[in-house]
Image (cartoon, rainbow, N blue to C red; front, top):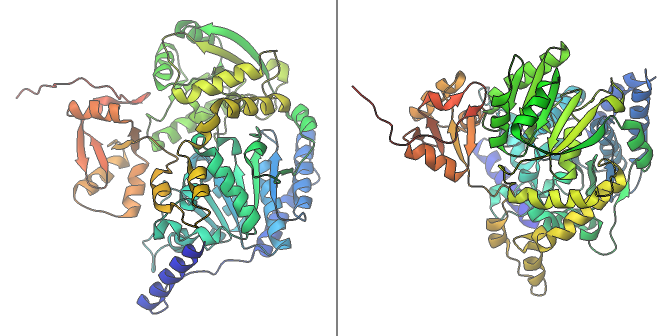
Amino acid sequence: MLFSCLVDADYLDTEAFMSAGGVRRGGYEPIAVLRERLKAHTAGFFPPRNPLNAKRCVILRTCEAAGAWGRGLYTLTVPTGGGKTLASLAFALEHAVRHGMERVTYVIPYSSIIEQTAEVFREVLGDGNVLEHHSGYEYDDSGEGGDPRRLAAENWDVPVVVTTNVQFFQSLFASKPSRCRKIHSIANSVIIFDEAQMLPQPYLRPCVRAIAELVRSYRSTCVLCTATQPNLGPLLPEGMDAQELCPDTEALYEFFRRVRYEQLGQLSDEALARLLQSHNQVLCVVSTRKQAQTVFRLLEGEGCFHLSILLYPEHRGRVLSQIQERLRQSLPCRVVSTSLVEAGVDLDFPTVYRAEAGLDSVIQAGGRCNREGRRSPEESVVYLFRPDGAYRLPVSLRLPVEAATMATQTGEDPSAPATIAAYFTTLHSLRGDALDSKRVVERFEAGLPSMSFPFASVAEDFRLIEEDTRSVLIPNGRGRELAERLRQGERSRALLRAAGRFCVSLYPQHFEELDRAGALEALDGGVYLLTDPNLYAGDTGLAPEAEEGRGFFA
């Protein structure tokens, strides 16, 4: 914290000197004004027009009233569809005003959720009061003085920040001045951890200890917000516990229960495809990209779609728009997807199939079924199945599957609060020391007696995204123009971010396979261009396997 204060002050003084005081910073509206703006927006929810809206209004008012509670650590456990985004914002703004806190920070696992959440906040609170800060966001620096939000991203000096788990925690555990500069802005703020079950498991213990330290020593209030609360109590320091903002969780679960779960046992790809073909509209979520492509190719007829990270983000967005439009028009729509569809994607299918996974993933998939509550839970089924032996689960998924099996072995509803609590308790027990895979907590505690802490070595080891992936730019649409600009030597942060919308990230083995086949051209900035258009399909995206030794005849 002290280093952050010093670094930011030094940067700001240098900035002011070099620009003769001409840099545009600040000018944001007070937190109290933002609170009143949210109240004006939510006033339109009353009186509620149906029982679902009535329950959402109760949750909203409950969270708003809890804003008067003291600083501390809280949970907000609200089922999917309960309106927890605006309810948590109501708590945060009320709490910040009551306690003289400086800002509200939303920490979210996926950029897709960030984009939606930030857009909602900008509409309600005003564009200039909200900073969206993640690797995929592009600032417009074309105007006079550039985009002030790019400056705000350096030190988070803005009332509302929406950012990622990666940006937030890697800044807390960083040692470089540019990354640490924003840390002092986290103190004396309300921090909402949305989809808290997605806190990174290999770093869960140090992340939880960091949250506890912000509450205990830096006057911050933290809220763990999710439909599937991860039961982090055993990881907290002795004497610290979290208080629930909306305590009637059992009643909320019963009210918002929209689906029933049914076990199908093991299914071959052919049997799975036949079942999917029997539905007019259906979503199937599997755990591997290989199975997603295989099952998709077995489907026939119009309205079949594939979703995975092998489609570049711009392409995925277009596919999702097509899916949403077909769902609205009740047209045939069969989607096979990896888990990327489970969080932050607004889809509502009458039926969902989910390959075995952790309970949090199963329930997230269930949230895409009967999302708007238009059908009864009895006719809205989430079918759970085991893929056949052709697919080996990734190591990261094996323990969650084992814990889910143990938590539901007596036939409990996977989405019941008691089942979820049992699942996370079992999962954390099975992981054991793997909840701090780099021994971060142990290393800091070892340095405590001499006040000599391993900041540099921990910063080097603390990587929430472990995979050494490479970005491959697909020259489709605007991607072709961006590739040419990179090839001509043009470089800017905005250009690289724009190019990211047309990039697919590949693991080393797949990248090397394409490289050996001569299908890649190196561009500066760590980006590679796909030179063989035949390796990117309009339905399944990039083919990570390529034939070697291609021949060209002249």
